[in-house]
Length: 483
Image (cartoon, rainbow, N blue to C red; front, side, top):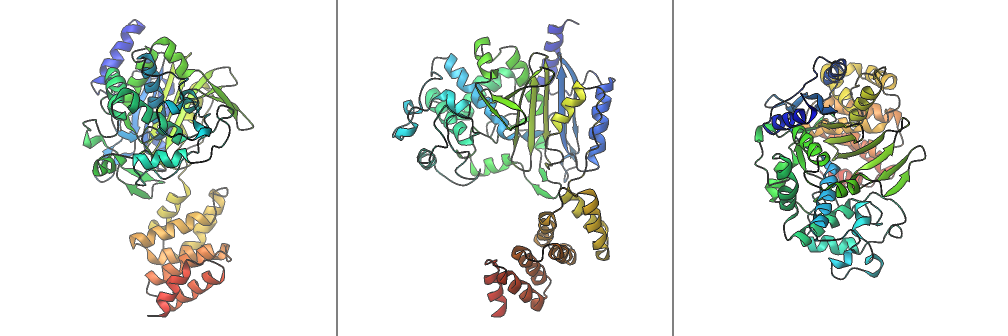
């Protein structure tokens, strides 16, 4: 089959929602599949898709999208893609430039009234390349704020540097771009994306509120394998929208199959002209971390690897979900990866898969359960008398990660669930033995005793917390002493 016909065949199957894997007998498929399948036992949950030279090497889900309904992750599972939203915003801006609605050299003062003097010269190009100098955020994703208040507060912030002189990642910069999309198109942000990007690409399960979501495919999140939550889509629906803390810089949801269609649409110029496409993927500013030099394009990071391959990549996460896209345009290699059970151990699996692709001799270490899930599993499966053994195992197996936070987090989570309260107290006590001068940990121990109706012990723990300067314990202490 000729390559062009093959690509059309793949695209047609994807649009039909068919799970397509054309190289299941390849050694690479087997290696990746075995690695991820083995990881499910240690908490891995998500999906991976890899395309090389028009061939879908793997496109498969692992673990549960919803444990309650026993729904498995698959290429049509809907995940929050976090900051990978930015490439849609950047593409939309370039589309508006093609339509003659704006210029990349336009200043924000063209679109917003009463912009302070120090910000009036900031350009769309600088916003796209994170070189405008705006702070990263002025609030949390779901903190209520009006459109007027958001931009008024943002424009009142102090710039981090003179615009155009440095790189500094800024979510708020992309929020400004989202509003410029609305002002120039005359349409709400998501409507413009749907009409100009998603529908032409054949993407029907990508967005915030507009898709007719396949509710059976909406994933729940299992942060670190211990914290369960609904998809943010349900929050958007409940709130009947979302505010500018998140809009245009993050929070879009999509399926793996839709993101394969996105890749096809970009590289075949279905959405953007060749000229605009080159602007999208060309680095416009350089930055580094001391070891590597990166560039930022419009919505993508750029790096030239040691083997001279040019890699585009971007990641996104809200803590519970994590998403990565890695693209080598010149080699026609594209990887999209999602997890709905994020932890440090699985957040960057896409880069492990990339190394497996580029180095046939590379065998990654098995996916390891994160320390929080390890502690929770131990608590659920072992008697209280073995707590010393738990500490021993943590020191042996998680020496670099083992600190006061995991024990305290799991202990507090057990109290919230009113489950294994005796174990919660024991975790707090073990933590105190390791960190005896930490007032916050004494406060947690007091909470444990209080939950277990051990009033005198709770009073002593809160008193110790207060003596160590942890003021939040005073109110709890006072309440117990006055009962």
